[in-house]
Amino acid sequence: IVLVLLAVVASSWYTVNDKEQAVVTTFGKVTDITDAGFHFKLPFGIQKVEKVNVNVYQKIELGYRSVGSADNFDIIESETKMITGDYNIVNVDFFVEYKISDPVQYLYSSNEPELILRNLIQSQIRNVVGSSSVDAVLTDGKESIQMQVKELVTEILKEYDIGLTLVDVKIQDAEPPTQAVSYTHLTLP
Image (cartoon, rainbow, N blue to C red):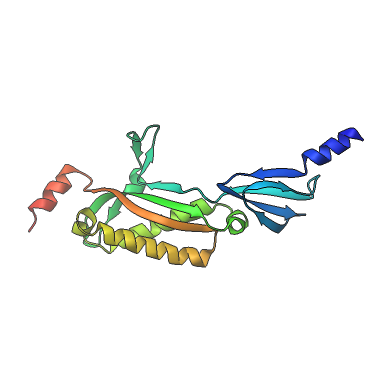
């Protein structure tokens, strides 16, 4: 009896930290969302709790991946190389911040919401860069490209409703892929 009582007590509470929200399911159906603090639940698997980091900004690196310290990174050629609207090739790296806005949708509306967001962002970046001139991508149009990508992705995320919100899109680096391309571009009229 004492062991059963201890098992009931041990499986009847949970804590949520200040960066999380917890989604409580009763027999597999969502019944509550709880904020930070100490909470009780029904024992023996009747109620289950999944914690989600909702107050944490998460990142997606496109065109590169950080390795260890901030100064070390690997280039991802398949993500960085793009064609502009005037048929030039450029290497563009993006840094994207997002956060979880709806923990229930994040957990249950799709299998891999981060992968969906990554693919959506890559698609819209290629769409916007593909309709921009090489000069805009390399120099004075970066701000406009960032804003266009953010607006397009935000609109589509509303339709998909996967529980993620785009916070920011920044061009980390934009350059011609080689010195020969750079030299050719500079010598053309």
